[in-house]
Structure formats: structure tokens, C-alpha cells
View (cartoon, rainbow, N blue to C red):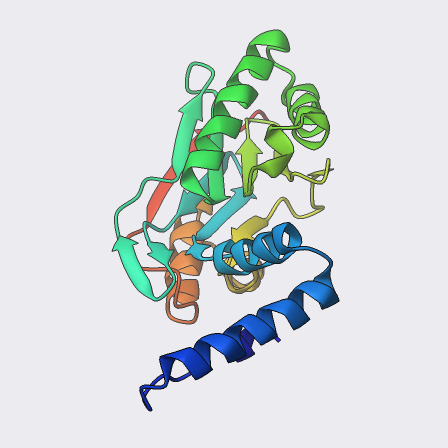
Length: 228
């Protein structure tokens, strides 16, 4: 219905076209319920998933855990930035965080997560659980569109706005548009090579960048030494 509102005026009959637009608007409003609801639908359709970023991957192997991400941020069909840093060190460099989604939203969540780390030092799982609870229940936080991977020397966790805190059996986590490709590549490299965690993350992200148009080859990798 909304697509019908785009009408060609090439014939110059503006009055006739205006009448048709008015008629279609009335039909759309009757279908949806009110002009305010119609406006909300149009705004929602216009704002839905126009920002695309990114691929973040974490791998744990031997005495190290690594997390990396590419640098591309895409708005609709335009590459807005190619060297965004999406990995952060927190809690005296003892925790690594990678984010995918809206950069501004992710920074807000990372700030809240850092506060939770101060509330529960040396307990990443509790801090992540509290963040997920805040994220789901807080009226303002629940509107934020991002996902986080948080790792320390013991745990690798995926935190979502649905209240989920996930840890996989193989400690390989990936998020963002190229996440599935990076995970598949990392699992293959982990099983069939002797590469280190950092090397696997870097290579898997490069493989994902060759498949996913929202991921580039500007890869940044950080690592921590694991507790034996």
C-alpha cells in the first residue's frame, strides 16, 4: 500500500495526482488505524537496519584467547568508515569487548558493562548477566541495537538485548553480518591447523571479508593470556 504513494507527476496534472495521493492516504489510514500510526510505520520502515556493521570473532586456544573485528561501517549502500576500532580493553586490560551493530548504542552498553565490572570485579559472568538484565528491563537500554562479545582469561560470553548470556562449548563466538562465515572458518582452522588463537581470528575474519559485503580486510586483533 505504501509503495502506491509514490506517483509519477510527469504529465503535469498536479491537481489530479494530489487527489489520488489524498485518496490513497485515506485508504492507508483506514487500513492502519490513524495518521499517527501510519507515520510511525513509515518512519520505522525508513530507519530499519540501515546501519550495517560488522564481523567480530573470538577464539580460545591453548594459553590465549583472541578477539578481533574488521573496520568497516556501512550506511545503506555507502561505506562510511573503513578503520573503525570495534575492540575495547576494560577493567585494567583484563577484559576484552567486541561489538557489532550501532556504534553509539554499543558505546552506551560498554559504559554500562564497565560499571557492572566494577560492581562485580573478577566475576565476568555475573557482570555480563547483570548487564543483560539491565539491557532487557531498562526502558532506554532496551531500544539499543547492538551485540557484545566479552572475554577474560576464563570465559568467553555473548551478550544480547534479549537477556541472553551465552557461552559455546568450543569457545568460538561470532557476531555481526559476517559472523556465521567467520565462525565456520575458525572452526575449520581450529580442527585442521596448529595456528594460534590470534592467527585463527585474523585468517577467519579475512575469509569472512571475502564473502560478506559489510566486512573489510582492515582487521584488528587483541589477545589475553588464559589461566591454565
